[in-house]
Length: 527
Image 1 (cartoon, rainbow, N blue to C red):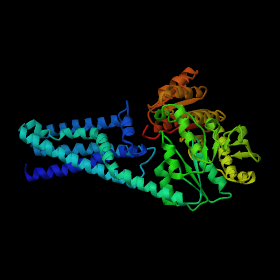
Image 2: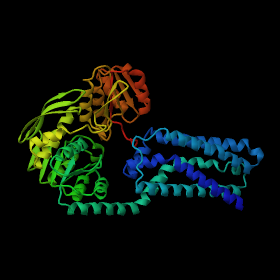
Image 3: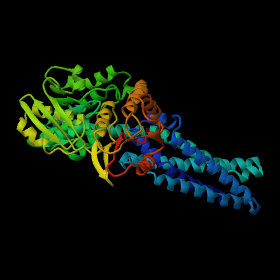
Image 4: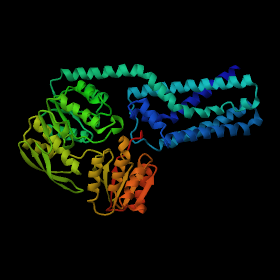
């Protein structure tokens, strides 16, 4: 192998590695959405009809065909020249693929955290090494075989690299856990020590739904009397809570920690970290049934918080987890006489020390119940009903949780962050109060395990009578469609489209000023 051949392999392999790494950056972002869980990523990528795997196959086929075609067509100029010319379509098609990918933004963009950047650098380095090693191996084999046709087409097998990118990424991610897990645990231990040392009251908030809303509402109301810090956005994992503590500090009297759970033991781990003395369990449904296995297991996991704290506030569907010193919705407090509209919600808030008439610019029956849970928590922490009423008056809608918007004369109900059956039922109830034509856009509800068909069928049945039903993607839309048609839905009003962008284009054609559209559960890319 000559020096010029070695240089050509090094340069070509490095450029190929760079291009393939660039083409697969979406995979790293989706792995991040999965919490860097390799098994969950593999389940997503290798499921039937995954569009990302189809795109990788098309890229591999295009690279193989165009590289081979250019090699053969330009072979008259010599094999070295033909190989060089064949690089043009190779880099052209991968560049075109990268540009096309960039025009379809991820629903949940990659967060350039330190871990993400470390994984990106390591993955890119491995692809560089893979492509350079593959280049040397193919060149050596072609020289040893002394076959002209093999030497001419020796770079065609590079088409296999896009198909190898996912397993390579999973291997790199797995190997990096030797560093990442201890590093993350150290980060969490620092936050745990800070929480243990802080004299503030720690409150844990969990449940199958409504966690973020209850947390946000409670933070607003409690601020009438206390200095409050709440975990931001939907940070509800050990890493998310640790980030809130380590970066934001604990200069407060009350710390509100949202606690999520996908598997047995998650709540116990969060309680060990935060050590809450007060808790809220918003409610229990079949959400995450896929990972828990049964509704009883979900109830037991959520109930772990109630058992760990001195005082707990329980939502209506969490009453079965009742423990000592618990306030239960429907018994000790409640949202009563709820009146719904597309402008806001009115209700009577019954608390242990009296009743408050409430009007808020929030939509849906669940908004009233979330406020009731937040208000009951505030009562437990010593606030009077007058202070609670003053705080409720300052509550504003939570983004993407049945948030009212208007655009081009359309009324938009943005419920993109809703992913549970009860919330979906409440959202459709509000949609049906709107004037004009009524439309819904949804991909269905996920993580329901063996109940996915049943729950999504019931969801589809809710849409019967609407003027336009748009189902997005391929995840669960057939179950929703079947439920819609079985409930008497009109086939002509039902549309199935591959992407949210396609749904938006359809809405632009079908709807006009004065109409209303509900965007229900915009699934992350990892579904």
